[in-house]
Image 1 (cartoon, rainbow, N blue to C red):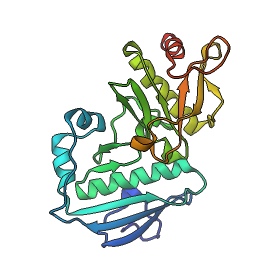
Image 2 (image 1 turned 180 degrees about the vertical axis):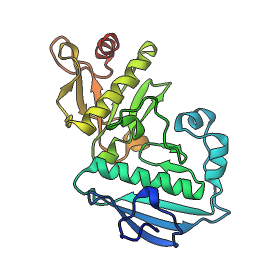
Image 3 (image 1 turned 90 degrees about the vertical axis):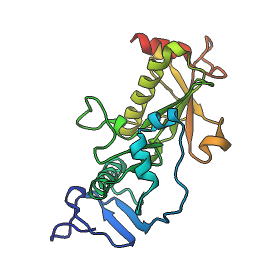
Image 4 (image 1 turned 30 degrees about the vertical axis):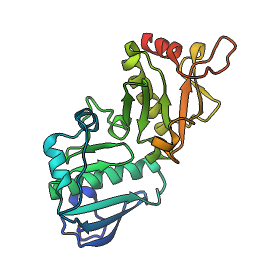
Length: 248
């Protein structure tokens, strides 16, 4: 990775070329990102996605074709986070965007299950201080009405999920999960057994145990559910808390 002569490269002034093999990028706060540049076998099998997943992941047909036929692949991994995990995630994202710009490439954010080009993930009216939408993605499975985050794990936070969301509360579920993502990244943790949202009808957080083998594997996750009249968590879903969120 080439940078300015003072030995303190930033993502924006990376100019290349990079040599095949291992590299290290260090953020201003001391976060360490490892980069591995490797040549891609032209006969390797490409990625295949259904049209619904293409749109949800941010890919166009043109981007998918480019992603599936690279000459080189750069694997970027966050190592030691330094003083601030958030700063390291932002730095790593900037490095990925700069590499995409230099190589006319496509970034695959594996933790957030999404793809983007040199312009980054599009966000309308972003919060100038920090916006979770630039780093966290919300997925929804239409059959099970299961909403869940992808990307919180980059910040050392468990992913969030909520089941059986009524169709009329889709927007509320998206907004609530993004609000919670913003909170746990910038303000404080939510742990199993705690509540969040309006105290009169709060979301109850408990350890997620569903979809382990087929989806989450070892990733920590919190499931959000309603509390009943006795202030006990229900078996699944949070329509009451979502309705209150939607009305607020």
